[in-house]
Image 1 (cartoon, rainbow, N blue to C red):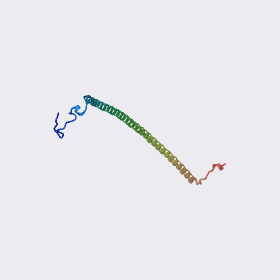
Image 2: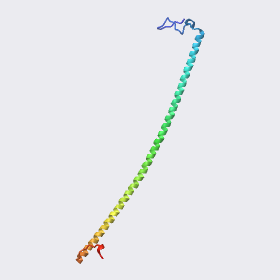
Image 3: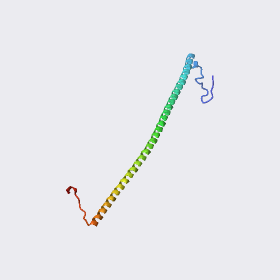
Image 4: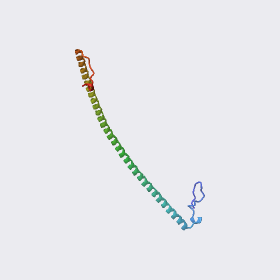
Length: 149
């Protein structure tokens, strides 16, 4: 008999008692120990399988995350490249439009200068005719070509 010291001193633990004193046969005690051993193996196996499954799942999630991050990075790089290409094209088109607008402005100035020259020429011709009319003492006449004849 084993006596323990502590709050339950003087009482026997059921594990320290003789199995036959508890009404359990040796075969039943061995069967119980065998069952407990099997249950502990099953529990260890179950925990190992769960851990393996969780690890596999976490690796799969990590692979998916890595794939997603790679695809996102590639997409962002492609988008930046496209934006740079569009900006380059925009700069080229803007330069062409500025050149075209400068050419239109230059042509407009030429046409205005030509119109001014023509007007000055007509004013000079009118002035010369006026001088001629004054010197000859004639009066300017209206000519209607459709009634001449």
